[in-house]
Image 1 (cartoon, one colour):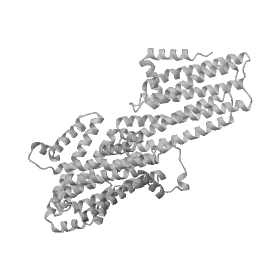
Image 2 (image 1 turned 30 degrees about the horizontal axis):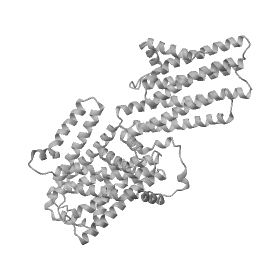
Image 3 (image 1 turned 90 degrees about the vertical axis):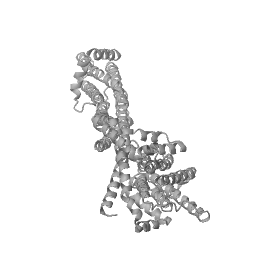
Image 4 (image 1 turned 45 degrees about the horizontal axis):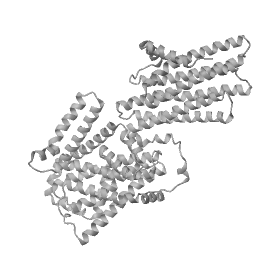
Length: 587
């Protein structure tokens, strides 16, 4: 092989790896986090977990990505270590689908149907369709599908380029001599391990092995130990991802490692032990692409069948290896655990996790406001301390979620995920401000408690109605955010207008009581502070609702939109306002 052959081989390898990367990224993006959510929910049954792990890996074309995802699930507390084991085993089976697709390039025959199955026949058609989808279609799903088709085409083109570049090596004695070294099971296994650890993809390393088959120099005696080593080498990605993670995440990576090491050890011992007494007739045969796919699949299926019943032992081994330590027991807030950096490589799922944190944060803010309001009736120091505690927590949520969202904004997001990200980025500050205002209510109540002041029964009755309106606008806002419900978001604005007018009415009524000597100026100031706080809370609810409605417009402006909403459907707005007014009639 001359220098030009070497360059052709490097170019083919580069295209092969790039095509696999592009295809995997587009498949993950097209799934929009749905595959990860399925894994998260449906792992209670071991058999189902194996099938899910295999299915998801077959779709996203990467056992490393699936395993890293699982490590993230365990680290964030979404999944227990026991649930993760089945998925890890299934991922090893799912990754074999790539070798079967690549084996199509080895099909031979003059039959037209056989020729059509060869990648050299259908890949150009897929590439053309991919280009049409990318260039001429506006739908994001079509763009993703076009990227998948082009990625696959580039992958197959790279595979063919590699095969063509190395084909002349069939006549080079030195190349054959090097390969005879790998007939030694230990050396062959180490070669497969190192190659896979470097490129961090067992699918890619198996593909490289398949491309070398065209030289006719790869026998099954060479291929089998290399494939065994490739299965161990793929563990490096999960191990790297678990560094700095929780002890259970490290244990998940350890389970992946032990599963592949034990599976490889058992398979190789039995395979070569049988070979001593009954030699395998195919060992010295020239390996083909399909044959390598068979070996790859057989090993992973058998390893899963043998070790799945022993999953408890694998878990025990991982727990014994990664022992509990004092520093590992410092648990972070369970809510924030789902914001794992590992998920940043699966933006669709990461967005879904951010949505959960934002909704939890919104519910906490709503509940703490209502808890602060309850203190107006009966002040309680424990409840007051809890209000401050929750408000501090929400501040932390805002900092962590805001930072995580900014990191996510740098990723390649789908249109829907970009909209959700925009909604969360615009809303998180308003949610945190709502919790801040709960402390403002608390401060006013504490002042009254210290001075032994109380509102009149009439004022308390009015505040109760006003408080019910506030609770309902908070409920509407949280529900709209949780379900991305634009209908509920639309209902927020007329209720917010009513709350504004109720605040004005309450102040007028207080002035009347003041003139009649039924109230004091000092109590009036306290009442005004509390009702103004209610109104400010409703303003923040309105900001969130407007964001949900207007997320398609990056330059929306909340106050301007409120006026537009009234003008756009004045009759509907007036009707909803009247309904709310009837519902919250001041006594």
